Amino acid sequence: MVKIKVVAILIGVLLMVLTLAYFYMGGFKPISTRLTDCSQINLIGVDFVGTPQDKKIGKHFQMVEEAREDNPLHTIYYKEPEGKRDTLHVFIGYEPNNLKEDRVVKPWSHKTILCTQAIVASLEMNRFVMPGPEKTKKEILAFAMEQGLELEGIFIDKIISNDYVEVWAPIKP
Image (cartoon, rainbow, N blue to C red; front, side, top):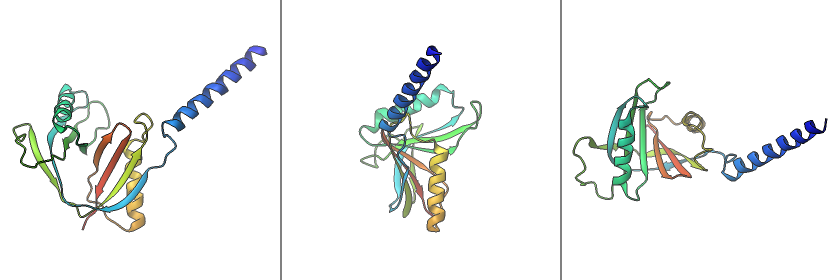
């Protein structure tokens, strides 16, 4: 009987510690959405088409990480896999300080996204407690519906730091 009480107390303390850690890391923060004006988004980066386990995706991320300096990392997922063996299509890039950078030798390319307005979802929390892409997309879609706006259909993840990500969803003009 005493062992059961001790175990129950330990479980209660553990749950409280985990809840406090989750709170401290920002796990209870809501996704903040807003409408903003924007101009065209000019990116330089690499396209990856393959499976999530392909070692090339890590190499592509590393190439862009090394080239981007202090500029935020951008990812555009055109096709997200449902399983480990499904095809993934992602553009990994950044907004260069100078558009005439000579990094357009294969596999590098320029990508321009036309944008006059966008819905921006801000995620300011530790990456371990950040909501997944589907939850973020649902928040953006709900905001668009609420405002009577139609999305272009692409979502641009702008990774500013480990604890701050913005998801940009351009609006149809």
